[in-house]
Image 1 (cartoon, rainbow, N blue to C red):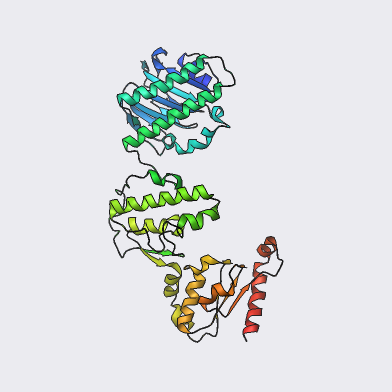
Image 2: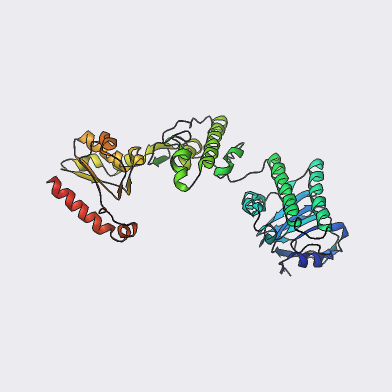
Length: 396
């Protein structure tokens, strides 16, 4: 039978292994003191880390099977399935386990950090292989937690136990990095990139194949780069912006060292948080102004011949509008064709002096003075129609 045994709490697991429960939310198990048992598939309601001292064979982890060798650490998060199909034979487990329930870390700084310990994810199917020295460090962490569990629970217990668990997990991060663990980087981990795995890159990617459209021309990093210009709009504070910018600088250095790619000052490299630079370096993409590409695709220059006025716009006409977005692209074409252009926008945040280089004949907000955000949402079409009619009457 391949039934999955559900273990929702620490007591259930200890009871199965014949061990005393010293704390309802955390346990350190020495398998040499456990009774022989049958293999089984198990789903845990808590975090579990196993130090295997025997060759495990084909362990089911999620929907896949992995051959975990002796002397490895295996990490499980609540709800995950792990185990070996029962063959009817009893065996003596060897090694150690650290178990802790999510309720133990609730309200602590560790609960916010758990997402960074990506080895608890199904996607991270590589076990951590330990050297003898690393094994000693791990066992010291287990023994420290076990020693604390021997004391009566008091007001200091939770803090001391959680701190020791966090120390253990941080050691695991260091050991995984030594092992060359792959990871999917985020803004906060860009500085941790040492090399980029290109094994899955399509062989057909070469210069001239891929065109990447960007609606801004900001570089990857620096005062006008992705972090400083766009991260504050997403809620990043000054410290976060500086960290993101440093990460992007590091990424540029890795791309240069590994691929010879020059993306530091590439116009549009900062588009979509650095996606532009990534496409240029990793996909051999040619960055082009998005609006330029669109205007060429629709044959704007030919279609605009004979027009009396071209009306363009966007939600907010602001400083970013001057940096390669639709308004600046359309206005630039109109200047070359000697056709007047005007702007209708939901919000106008520029002065006539600031938009003067675009040679616009008129700039209008479609929203009446004093209109609330809710009014603008509900009446967008009507407000736009009124603003356009007024503009055309004035133009005539």
